[in-house]
Image (cartoon, rainbow, N blue to C red):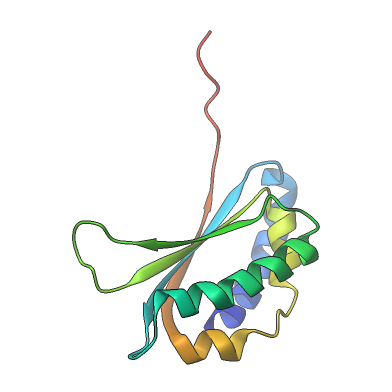
Length: 125
């Protein structure tokens, strides 16, 4: 549910900006914790369903999603890092409903998110 609320809230703003940065890839990072008694494998299984839906909805296999955990430092939580080829593709996903909110909510709690825009460096000549 948290994912849906956050995505819906920022969709309008980012769709207005899509013409400016539409060709640049974007990443959405969610900060989460597993609920007691649940495993990374359970979270990844639900996320695999979401990724299948996202790729079909976005019309591209360029959408990726990673479970990112700490190697050194605070080991308490994890992040979902969702990568999109452009803001327009992300907008298609943000406007949709995967029907998986209850499954995500049963296993994890996500308390924050951020969107990043990447700009690729061109190698020097």
